[in-house]
Image (cartoon, rainbow, N blue to C red; front, side, top):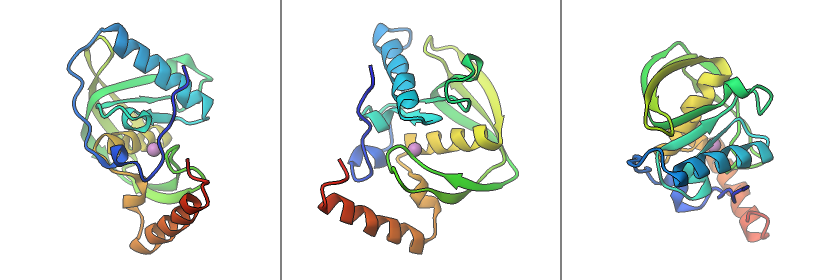
Length: 171
Ligand code: NI
């Protein structure tokens, strides 16, 4: 099922999400499936549970955008272990549609997470995958990519969004 994605302005996006405590349940599997479906339907490469109004530490990522089933990643209660280097690249967010800006991120990250069965695993990513991992883990901490921009750029985007809200174009 494609879920509704909440947009910037909803407090759930700026709330630190709670760890997942129950694994292997039909509810958790359904949520993971629905999150992939929602992400693909919106042509995203990452989606965090708070973006579908579930304040839990869960995110899905697929840098191939559905082309390669082996690139699907489920991050539950993820923790970044190592960050290396830096990269600057354009970033967007399904909760802030229409706005893309350059964001500085670590070039490479190594992380530890659990899968839907609760099994721990470690994985690493570079470039786009690393960027997606950092962006999604930020979401679990209530942090949006806007926080990584200069105050000037952030205020400009906020003003534009306020206008869209007033015009009823930010639902
Ligand atoms: Ni996002």
